[in-house]
Image (tube, rainbow, N blue to C red):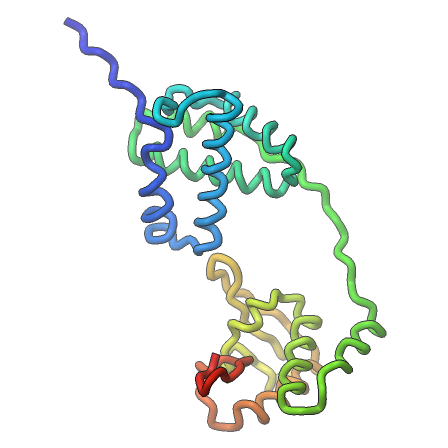
Length: 235
């Protein structure tokens, strides 16, 4: 008597472990990345339900195919989704299939199928740069108070380094090197990736003055570079 083939696992049967354990704990993905992947899987679920008319309680990896993914990408394109956003959704699905294939070797062929789905072409766009006269006008807005010094220095840092606000606000005093001939800041970006960003000598002068006012000579190197005090607590 021949054994009956083992039924394919339900497609969404591994999402909890993928989102709650694998991504944040094993891969060290940020909360932002986990939420992005959660959104991608939620959108794919909507596509399965609304477009394919299949219940998620019956949709299995056996029904998953390259054509299914291509249909999902087309579905996203008709819902005002940018190419870069569609690529993020595709990356989430590929990551989920890699995870599933590691758990179940019979799904390896499914992972290979989705790996062959190409990314969308993302047109390169030139970023607009604030003119120097406009930037000078902006930097005149903060007052000459201590708080104004902080805000002005923060804006100078953002303009000169091209970093995101969250990255600058995450800097410690130890992340600033302004004493040498080549001043720089050390930024922790997305995915905890660290990078060195050169800053101008003029920006280094502004930083040195700011640090002398806000931190003094004996401030701990682990202190936040930019901070505010709310009800006596530094934040």
